[in-house]
Image 1 (cartoon, rainbow, N blue to C red):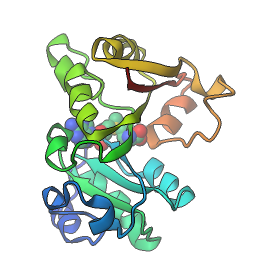
Image 2 (cartoon, rainbow, N blue to C red):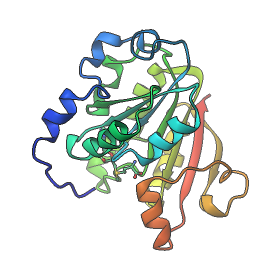
Image 3 (cartoon, rainbow, N blue to C red):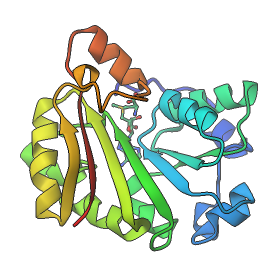
Image 4 (tube, protein in one colour):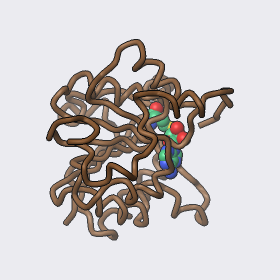
Amino acid sequence: MRLKNVPGSREAVAESEFAVTDPEDHKGHWAEEVFKNNDPIHIEIGMGKGKFITALAAANPNINYIGIEKYSSVLIRAIEKMEKDPLSNLRFIRMDAEDIETIFSEGEIGRIYLNFSDPWPKDRHAKRRLTSRRFLERFSHILKPDGTIEFKTDNRQLFDFSLEEAPEAGWKIISSTYDLHNDSELVSGNIMTEYEEKFSAMGNPICKYVITRK
Ligand code: SAM
């Protein structure tokens, strides 16, 4: 993603009631402390401007959602949307997903969404891909035993890498497609992300998998 620096975005994110600035403090107690309920928690990592997770949260009031994004310059756009139309079941964290285990405890999360994750095409950067075994290992610690990861991308190379990586890392593929928008089963209920809208309008097929632990 090409990022424009948005002056003041870091401060605005830090001050927003919708961004959690002390995420480590809620480890193991997110539902009760942050959402004041016992509903399941689903997260999106690399949520960008938040179109997907905001629509998902509006459609599913009985699920708590947390959007995680590394850069305040994009996260601020999601926060601006929330300020206009607040949702009690959605919060944001500005952080690098590398540290995800410092903020969620074993089995605290029911589902992880990864949408159009950065491809890191060079072999030497494979470890940085969010679908690499290194990240899957981290995700396996915070997910419930039957928890799932849903991953979408238009990048065929990244998708093929991810399809090979998951079984190697101890995950099984529940479903997958190389053309989500023409897959009558998997497309049902699909919410498009910003990147998905952009790339499918250019004619790129969208790949998707759903995985769980073996
Ligand atoms: N998910 C959105 C979509 O589909 O429209 C945005 C996709 S954009 C290509 C990838 C986003 O992931 C960027 O906003 C980037 O800053 C974020 N990101 C990449 N690596 C990350 C990491 N390790 N932790 C948190 N966010 C990350």
